[in-house]
Structure formats: C-alpha cells, structure tokens
Length: 444
Ligand code: UD1
Ligand code: CA
Image (cartoon, rainbow, N blue to C red):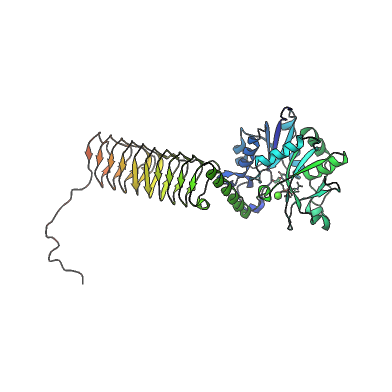
C-alpha cells in the first residue's frame, strides 16, 4: 500500500453574503449552534488535513478569531472571483505538497465521507488529474453545469451566465468543491483569465486548462442536500433542519431514546450517552453533556449543563450554563439552575431558582425557594450543605452558607450563615385573633 498523500484544505469564505441581510458575516451564522465555517473546518480536521487555509475578506474579525489556532487565514481584497480566492492561499501552502481540497464556508453540510471519495478517486488506478463534486438538479437553477465529452469525461464547467441553452439543460451541476494536486492547482490558477460576463477569475475554468494539457478530470456525484450552499435566511433554516435530522439519527443510533425526535433540538456538540431518555419538546443549547440513564422530560431547555447518571430533569426545567445536576438528582417543573451544582440525590422539584450555588448530596429545596445571588452590582455564592432542607418560599440572601442537615423554615429570608443541624426561621410571628371575623358584614 502506498503512503497516504497529505491533504490540505482551502475554505472560501470571503463573500459578504449580502442576501443574508445581516451585520454578521454569512459564514458565522450558526447551524445547530455552530457557525457554518466551523462545521466546514471540523470536516477538514476529520480528514486529517495537515494544513487548512481560510480565505476571508478584511472586516471579518469574528471569523478570523473563530478559526485562530485552527486554520491559517489569507485575506482576499478585493474579491475577484473563486479562482482568485483560491490563489490567495498560495503563499500559505508554499511548503505543502499533496492534495488540496477546495471547500466553501457556506456549505456546512458536506460530509467527510464524500470528500474521502473524492480523495480516493484522485489516488486510484488510472486516476484523473483533478476531481470535481457534482450533483443532479433537474430544475432550472443558478449552479455551474458540468459539461461531459462524448466519452463521458468532464470537459468543462460552464457558469449559467456563459451557458448556451443546450448547456442549461444539463442536470449535472457543479457543487464547487474540488480536489486538486497542489503541483497542478497553482500553475493552472496563474493562467486563469477574467474575460467572461462577470469579469471574474472563475475557479471552474481550471477544468478546461487541464483538458488543454490532455489531462482528465473526474466527477464524484453526491446528494443535493450535502451541496446546498447557504445564501439566505431561508437556506439557513433548511440547513438547520437537515443538520437536526442528522444529529437526531446519530443520537438514536447511539442508543438514546426519543419518543418524538422531530421535536428535540440538538446542537452539533450535544453529547448524550446511551440509555438516556428524552421526552418530546426538549431544546439543547451548546455545551450539554447527558450521562446514561438520565431522563429529560418535556419542554426543558438545557444549555452548558451536565446531567449526571440517572438524574431526572423537567418537565419545564431550565438549565443554564454551569449547571450540574448530580447523580440521581431531580430538577422539576419551573426550576432554573445557573452556575449551580446539585449533589447526588438532591431535589429541587418545583418553582425554584438556584444560581451561583452548590447544593449538597440529598438536600431538598422546597417549592418557590430561591437564591438571591445578585445585589444589583455583584453576584454572590450560596452554599447549601448535604441533607439540608430548605423550606418553601425561602429566600437565601447570598453570600450565605446553610450547614449540613440544617432546616430552613418556609417563607424565611436568610441572610446569615446557618450552622449544621440548626433550624433557622426568619419571618414575622403569626398573630392569632379567635372569632375576629364573626359579626363582620358579609358581601352579598
Ligand atoms: C460557484 C461556482 C459554480 C457553482 C457554485 C456552487 C465559480 C465560478 N462558480 O458559483 O459553478 O455551481 O459556486 O455553489 O466558481 N468567494 C470568495 N471570493 C470571491 C468569490 C467567491 O471567497 O472572490 C467565496 C464566496 O464567499 C462563496 C464561494 O466562494 O462562499 C462561492 O462564491 P459565489 O460567488 O457564491 O459563487 P457562485 O456564483 O455561487
Ligand atoms: Ca454561491
């Protein structure tokens, strides 16, 4: 077996994406909680690309920051077309020799499997000199068309603006993605001309240049769903739907029970172990980790949170960043946790807010109890010991510590530390007037 040829990836992302009507660069819009550009970058990493170059325009600091440390950046200003964009990566790849994959920052759904097929085709017996990704789209559209010769080999790619009516009838379209050996790519790019309708340097013209050198160009065909570029908010919504169904399928395949997967929203980084049960209408934000045996009931929102083995969360629970629900702990309806750890077997079953707090093992938080963690200027911490019992509607005014096994009476406002095993009450004494209501005039 011959050694694996090194792979480099160039991600085109300099376009402004005006049709998004957004102040955020198009490629930074999220699909399943992750910017499109980062999906593509991760796909390149999955293929062990030894060098990744992202092409940005100036004025995209968010994108430059997002790829920092993961990809080199080349700035393309002004933007003179896809061929010119790829050429901008030349100096970043001057020491690279191998296969260059050209990817698009607005095509987040492309899979590593399809890219691998392209790389394999480029390395196989009687391999072509370059490989183009195509898809079948029978209706009228704005994609470049793959023109085949009478031996079924790719002859050229024509842009819609340049195509003849016969060429517009071709249903095999150009996805844009290519795999080209570095030794050929940059020599072809140097020869590109911009004498076309748009006055741009078309990357697609390298096919005709290859043919002039009597080289062959291969085509790998895949589903349209993978090749869909995101240009508008509508495309973005569609890409999200496709990504959601992939993530749900992956979770099901990994042993997660979902009674109605179509109502469960996942993020690209949602990590769910086998034997977790998720009821309908659960939404995961980024950074959620759910351990096996946990159950998440309907209408819960979970973001930046860890749910340990066997815990039960919801219905109607909200876990915000930094929430950790301990093993076999319970978080019930209308309970909100933020930067708070619930110990093993602890319970907060109804209507509670626990923020900037630690709650010990087997402690019980009563209905309506809250931590008052914010004094208008700063956040303060609440510590609740193991086995403690916080009565209903108690307000724990942080910073405050409730010792192990201490009991807080219902309705108390607690601003001072409570020692272990103590009972603490802080509420007005009840006054009692027997017979007071007798003889009072009654409403008719
Ligand atoms: C391109 C292809 C077309 C293909 C389609 C697939 C060319 C000439 N045409 O057309 O055959 O069917 O993609 O979606 O390649 N970009 C830059 N700098 C530039 C120009 C573009 O970075 O100067 C980036 C854009 O941000 C975008 C991508 O390249 O991510 C594609 O550019 P776009 O102008 O949308 O190309 P299309 O006209 O759609
Ligand atoms: Ca496009």
